[in-house]
Image (cartoon, rainbow, N blue to C red; front, side, top):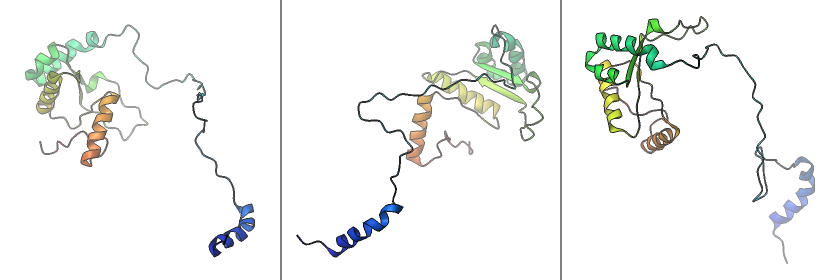
Length: 172
């Protein structure tokens, strides 16, 4: 059996390269097939936060309903039906505390409009659109469940949009 010159050269160089060669290890844990993977338990440490949570018996709707309804009646009476059924709340700047001194880059909004939705309801989508078109806010924040985030990210990927972009409404 005859060996090629390249193969023969490699065989001759192998003893010289061996000291410089090392086995690369994977940064990921490698487990044999069908073995039970053991997840290490994480220690939880108690920590203090800057903002105290509300007391256990705090009821948001009872606390803010009348103030919010009055503010909506004064600013946008056409949205009063949403306030009356508990879907829409308006929290004015004077109702929440000051920004901490260390957050100098943060600008407090004049008001925060909260709207409760159900992603299975077409009426919720209509209500949200109605509030946005009426109030014309500078910013809109949407809190999505994980399944909606994944669906929107996949849809944006198809159209070449950023993963955190729902849709572009600059021209509306």
